Image (cartoon, rainbow, N blue to C red; front, side, top):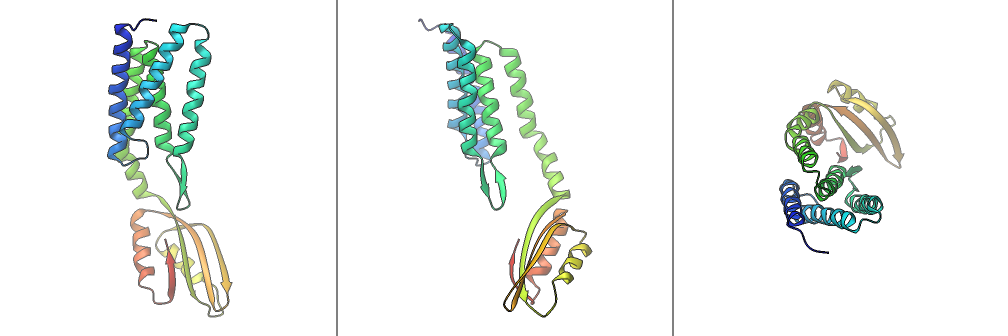
Length: 209
């Protein structure tokens, strides 16, 4: 099986697109960065070229590429501080593999179109995402006080005064202390104002936020 010039061009184009995507991920200090994205793009392209050149069951090889990328994506997603992170990077890995497969199949126009759309979602939509997060955030708070024969309902009223919605709340007493756990929803500014108040509240012995 001879190496055709078009195959080389496909691999180089995959290298270029993978490098661009990987640079964006590397800039944001993500787990799958420059080298990972390049290898995924080039590898997917090569597998697709081989499946076409072998010609026995190209669809099965392509399906196995998707399965393999699924394992890589699952390894990127993990839980940190009560939230799931890495989903965006895992999705980018999936799209990068699709780009490599498209290039390997010679579908340059649709692959470049997908690359442009994916790039817009990463770069152009990022400020919009930040704006939404400033206007609406969900945070978890835990505070502990000395038990004074009453609940911590005063803090629930405090949350409401800062225009923060209580999504979930529970209180537990242990000996001479009482602990409250709340999930609050509101703007970033209101969260920061509440945090400043609680940090300076002498009755709060412990605070997690």
